[in-house]
Image (tube, rainbow, N blue to C red):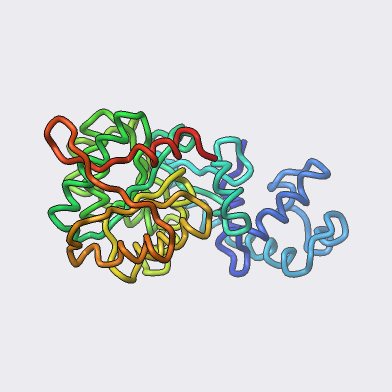
Length: 308
């Protein structure tokens, strides 16, 4: 039994971040204790028997008092079919631990086909107010990724995100939607309802059930989407903001970065030249496929299939 609610209570205590959660797990692993055993110890016993630091022992003591509150939240999750993937479980993406290190979320809240966490995926990101050119590029890119059996990873906002998810699902592909809030805030967009299939889509949140949207959470969401991906394609980016910051995350994490090269850039893609010039993003140019102009994703697809 995983005893998820105990880990949930710990995560909700101020000062207990991913690094502290891993420290607690490592301390339990040596003597073969469970998280339930830990909650039965006094702070003095935690320090003496497990060599836990005073702030950690105090945090565990505080988490013990949160258990009754967490139980209601936990059963709400279970009733809704939302699962928890803890950082030490086999199904937790190895990429997150390797790339994000101590910033990797301690737990992921997931709904849908959790096996998609093990599939090779590419992030398709862009503006909510994407241009008509960008809409067509996103449409063709999602089709091309599906054709090569690559999972499409994006947010769940209007514009680029919705086009990428919808086209991938309509084309028989698989997608991962990464949320910038907890599942209590989720409202499935109308454009996805008629094509949604829990076997072909996974919704992922790194935030507790009641967490609300914030700009900071959106930035963290974008970084998580990049870390889950083996390549990142920025269809259109302004010169600053969340999408540009997502590109920076891909760069710092060492993930292959791509962006659309236009003959004339629409305002919603004003940042694309800077992505190529300053962040080393590889240009995605158009090519004719069956008399239709499509983005050439050959190099990106190779990175996903054969890269690290």
